[in-house]
Image (cartoon, rainbow, N blue to C red; front, side, top):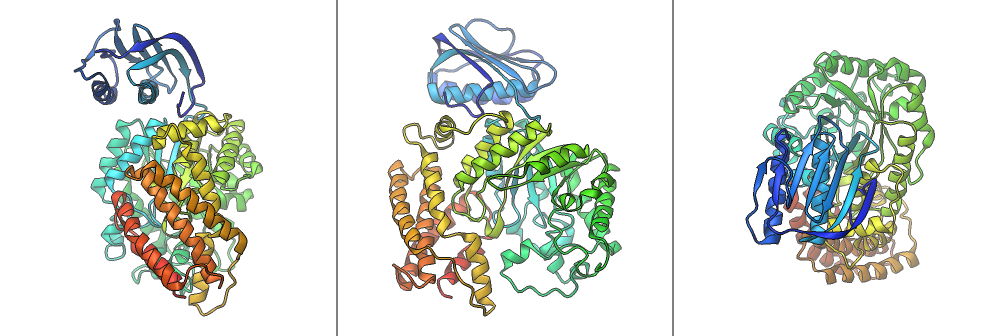
Length: 587
């Protein structure tokens, strides 16, 4: 059975329940959100049965799909017998997850459902997904809603969007363009949609480092830690570095508090992520000579106090705390530390350190899809698996799977689905395996492919991209633009092998039919990876294709990429990505 996440206990029984005019019945006390999702299931079943079905409140009777729940909890049972189906949740969320499991079964078996019994519960209470909308793609509201639907389908119960200046803050007027930001209306509507799908939309805002757009503006440049800083690198690199706020200036605190106070009313969540990660330049400019650990904790404590006065509990990234371990005791004990690590073999001692600190901890692996056209499954599998294990063994309160957009967010949503699903699986089953059965389930549920293991193809395609790394080309290009002559790592025979393998994979994706946008985006990524390998050869003076041929092939690819991007995202940084590709082959 293709189920994500895999149920804790599943007992198959003899017989089938045939969907012939079943009624959907909700216990009278059911949460109103379950009516919405029961209605969605009703429409699906009506298409299968070619009959009109009843949705009502009442008691369980033969030939009904009966849904009930207790007061709270994510656990549920699902019983499919020859005379009906029963879903019982510990709480409303549990009943919702039972419905999601049933929906996954219906998608596979159609009208004839196998009789079975499922008893299921998650290992982590917090099962989150963190999505960067600041460094490349800003999704449309419609796309964000689709993401919510897909995440809730896999029993994720928390969503955070990484925001720097791409919301309509009053301070960002004339700094951030409308196509690069979300509006209050969009976020309020998204919050309501998340709630409907049993997902908590937790506000997340960069409040310390990573303030490039604000601190590069004429209005707020005086608040940058590095006085008179002049950028020398490509925009994407500058956006990642060197824009930490001056903690000694009272205007800095007032500015950040203003951003927080404008953002808070849009969310029903009682939590707030202040980020505070990668403060690279702290005490290297205006505060030179001061203790960076002390300055860091002092500013963070002020932000925490500001939010606690407004009734919010605080989350923050834990990387700077790890650099100053002796300072962790100065943070309020209820501050949740988000422990991120994206290595294939993550560092267990960091998870242990946070556990011993007495602070609540959420482990944060990643999809390994940033700086790539398709995700790197070999890395994400190890990273997510180990972080989930370490978190579970050290009693972390949750897993927050991260998805970043470094250097333009070139990877489409459809090309990072394995990592998204793997995070959902491991948040529910911390000690389970991401094995071949999981690959088959992901291929079926995420890409609609039951005969072809799409995940195996994506894994192989990701390997082909290793010889043409976007994360290496951006700094290489940046150095060339500065007049330097950086070397480009070149493994000619391996690149040529990956071009051949990539072309073969491209044909396999095309044979699946690229009318489906999920497969179409994978096909588009395969084309890009082949072309990027050709480009690396050309830049290293070992080209198979001439400059004119490369220019033409990228020109043929770009309109399809633009169409794919704009199908799900605002314009955001699309022009930056296209400009980079066009300039790359001209250096």
